[in-house]
Length: 363
Image (tube, rainbow, N blue to C red; front, side):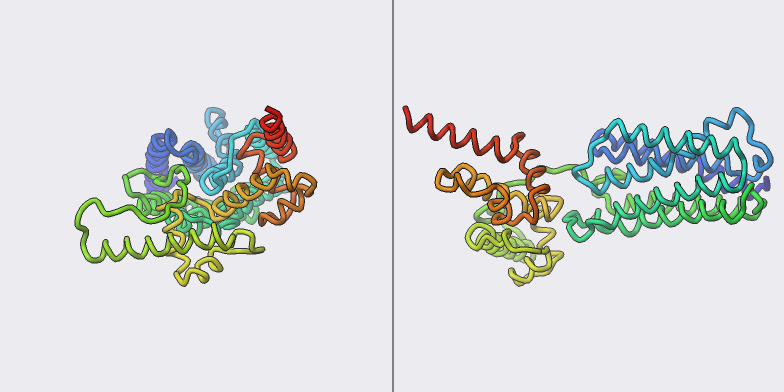
């Protein structure tokens, strides 16, 4: 292994370990920090085991690091899911998926044939594609502006670089690319790690690598809060704009019931309010605490449906009809959202509410 390759890979390794430590610090506040740290450590393991010095035969003491690196495609998917999906929850099958891909990778490594290696690399490519899908799938619904930028700038870059690594192993089986390929991969990993850290820090307000933790949605206020002190002209103008925009949003949601409109998008709602998408995203996220546009809409839809289910005059109205009238497109998403909010199915909620009214009337 050349001196240049040693320096490049050493720098990448120690920077990745540092990033992992900082992400673990953030993991107390943001669950994605844990998966980000595990991903960084997996890449650090790959930096070591993919060095040209181990191209002939990997020492036994490095085999555990090889296994850790093999599981990184699954960790990458979990990192993307935890970072971009607010409904993501860890599950035992995530650990099983990691164990499965590690077992597959170990088997392919021990078999040692080009076909086995290509097969494992193809699975890794699939995981990279899934991670990129998590980054892009609901970008238009994301109300956290920093996270919207991070979706395209960071995770997609990592996905494409992971795909490049896997593709290089397919094109150059059994490390046939030599020291030149090893140096190129090491240099790319160092550059990617620097970008990884700089991009995360660029969207941070408090020095953390992942600044956007969970926030609780707030009720839609009638008007914006009064200034605490005499603000500047620009600040006063922004407050006045927010006050007008919040009032217009209240009118659309409470009076006009815009949430019932099929296919309502953030752009469509912004057009109704004669404002920009960016301004409306900022308002709903920073003033009301919502991180996803569908969650914001579904809050109104669920309240609408709950009112209808508790109404004795609508006792014979099918639940599907109530769900569709409230703005849901099908029964499945409605049932899941309803149970997540109330802990009951719509049928159970209706029976409880109507039974309570009957008991009160009898008394």
